[in-house]
Image (cartoon, rainbow, N blue to C red; front, side, top):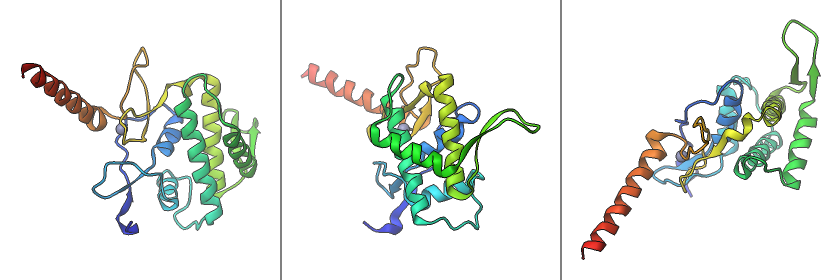
Length: 199
Ligand SMILES: [Zn+2]
């Protein structure tokens, strides 16, 4: 595979409410080989670029490959947690990944000062950014808002979306992209069946 051909996909999914949007967007980061529909896991560079865009990492910061490996491992672990859905839990390896990342980030309670109480990271750089993401994830598990995150139902899409529907029946990361594509696909399939019946 030509490495130059691989690039981060644009995120077209509507935002999740509040801080959860940061985690939703992080988990939606993925790559594509140009001209191919199938989503690939993000490259370390895609993750770095995302953290810079979101102001979690200075553009001049040069993260180590080890730190970016931790970022990819946290990405995978939390993505799997979305896949297991409401009431699901993390696998043992994912628990270890997240506990180790939280320790490396130096997550701590901040109760003093002018702002509201916060779960904040002592570390800077990529590890600090992961601490912020893990703090938001942790609080969303507790308040239940995590249960509205879903992985897109399109077979070639790994984007994560926040299901705002009342009965939690949402299926697609965005109606413009995967929703539309699957509507057309379903319509074509119905039409084929219709023609078969005619014959
Ligand atoms: Zn999708």
